[in-house]
Image 1 (spheres, rainbow, N blue to C red):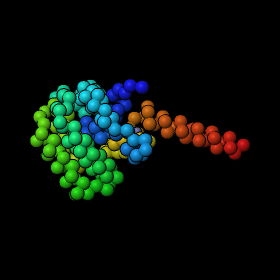
Image 2: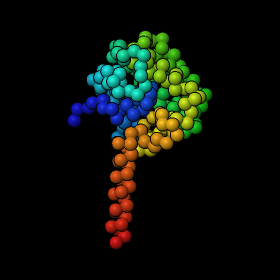
Image 3: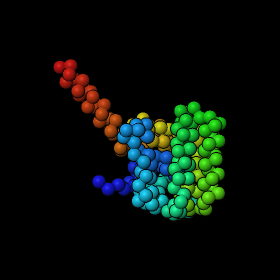
Image 4: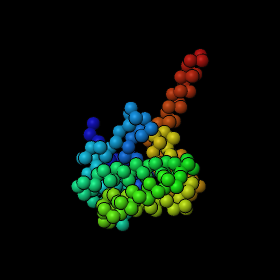
Length: 182
Ligand SMILES: [Zn+2]
């Protein structure tokens, strides 16, 4: 099946988180997939993000200039490490410093509209303490997302995908328990 950047893949609510979420099943090394490992996917990402990312960009995103993939991946991993820890109230000055270093590098390397540059800007905006409490980890797929709802009640990265999947699983388990018990 060919891969495409569907709206679900932009459930993060911020460009930096959508970039972090380009790794599927990060917690399971046996099944984990890095969508950016395929250059065609990475090339198609900026255009899709311009259309589908919930965080509006000041500039339409351009394809990543040649030779900057490794830097973007390092930035992505620093984003995931820091904000994943932050969402679990376990971030540290060391993680923050690591992220800030990657942000600085991307800002020096790029210009407005470049994927790494704009991802770095997005991460900088997310570091703001006013975001505390809005940053969450989806209990189904473990993607990072920003809960923009007023009462911070959003449970899933995407209710239509992860919410329903978990509901179906619970339903199946309940039915199975009933069957086993009878
Ligand atoms: Zn999810």
